[in-house]
Length: 296
Length: 286
Image (cartoon, rainbow over all chains, first blue to last red):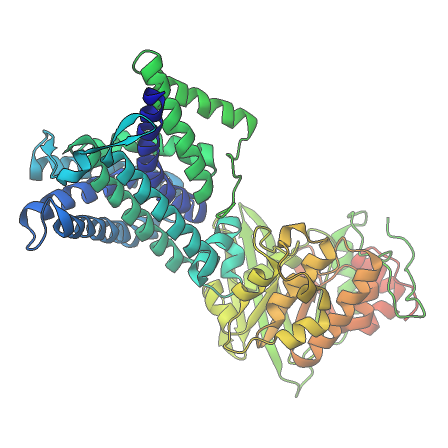
């Protein structure tokens, strides 16, 4: 029983990381039709910026409010980079899918190379607040606090995103734009502003995932973004393009499946099962669990 | 092919029975030739300023030359109806005016609104400048509620909900319902309501009665009639009973060109002319 509890919490922690990366990816694809292979770069930027800030930024550090400040710096860095990528590289290429894919793939490779040049190719130990390494006892299982931190952060981001989509004017524009972008412009709305915003939001969530993955794995490396991105893409496809809630449900399914199969089966079998789940969902509901809708 | 016209009923109901021919059974070139022979009076009478001038508008999409130098004017009041058989480019004309020509297409020529050239300006800027658009097939946001659809369309600080809800009381009753679960007629009302919330200089309305039940066609026609008292309308419409009720001027497009312009009444009063231009018998009551 305690193993199942531990596996569940660990799977949900992994799901939290997938969700944080996938939610932005999903909104960007749903609204702007951009398949952003550079999304993993935003994660790496967040992770490295947090790591750098904890060591160098005045007031920031590996513990307490200092760590919160370091993470805030990382999230800010990811947000700025994402907005700049949209404005400078994606905006001139809207509706030119092949060029977009080439640019974002190129950017993700160049980004990894730049991080390697700047900080070295080897993983760097990540400054973790000491309390995240403690355990609490839940239903007989000793659960590390870092998993709970991931879950709480992801739930908070999910709630904030849903509230934003539901209650704000830009949220309304994004939900409508995911359905029919042309009609949004035909109501007199410059939908491109919403594209930049969605990129920035996605960048912030991915950067937060970067900082939290540093806490979870204990290190950062230039390629960590790319490996998480693959599963995030799977989560987006399973959940339905443009659906935040769909991404959340799909992330939980993928995280739990991967964790349990990897533990009870042979290691690596979980990853194969995730791909199998993807195939089943695509056959059963080609548009993903939620179809194409930003809220459902 | 086209049936004989459904006469307007004594209570003002119009039926959907009388529609512009859907098959190109007669040679479209014949229609052009007929127009040249008959050539009705031009829309722009000397002295009456027109609001929108379309001149030599050509649209090519994916290699097809859909509009080949279309020129016409839209009066500064009342309803100007754009007529023609299916596929001649009526919707393409509206969409080109609004800057909605697809990426694989080009629109050339000139479109002037109040004397100002607008062809090539971004759609959202044109709509903000007062071109209200009601697309074919309504295009309501199905995942949003009726209230959210309307809220999204607000372009002023004081949107005219009183007008919209007096025209379409149904919309206020169903404010919290998802637009995707509305009937076709209700969706059309929502689509019209989104535009009528705002102050517009010109409404571009594409086939608002398509696929609607006769009772709803009447409701929509009444709403258009009321809206047109306040703002000029360029209307694409296939239902000739609605055209008869609303039309001031008529512009007929055939084979990518303007084949006839003149008062709508004159067009519909001449069965030979309507038949040659629209492949329909329009000998119904008027």
